[in-house]
Length: 180
Image 1: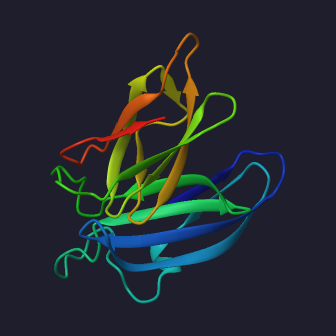
Image 2: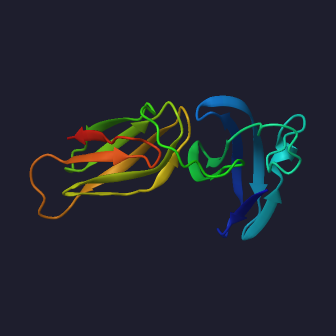
Image 3: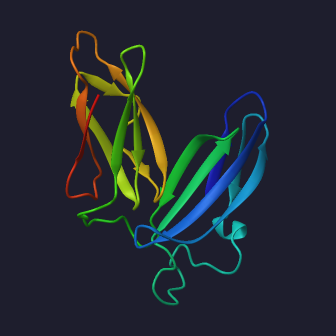
């Protein structure tokens, strides 16, 4: 079940996207639905109601191996992601992989800060952004297979020279370095 909450005093017109993956990168289904949430309202939506056919997303019936091992739900409005949640029907992954395909590209900004553009081929779990002289606007987030995410890197007061750092996913054997 997806729980949606609009805490704003105005209605929210949004789009809910649900994507199912297996083996860290193989898309095995998904759906998109337009939603209208009333001001200060909540709504519950069963994921299976969005999908065609029967999917045992909770592994309750155990008709065989799980249909997917990752469910990603993203709420967007005006093309901007407002919220994202992940679910692991077969349990949280505990292994580490040699190659997720996680890349980090940095674009300098005129104000001395930078934008860190992250891409991944496979699911990247709990990405940590670390570095000297910088403070990321977001940290410890998941990145769905094939997704792109931009994180604003703020220069700490008194920091000089290039911004250097690394991104490390919990399920990756090694970190990916970056420099501005």
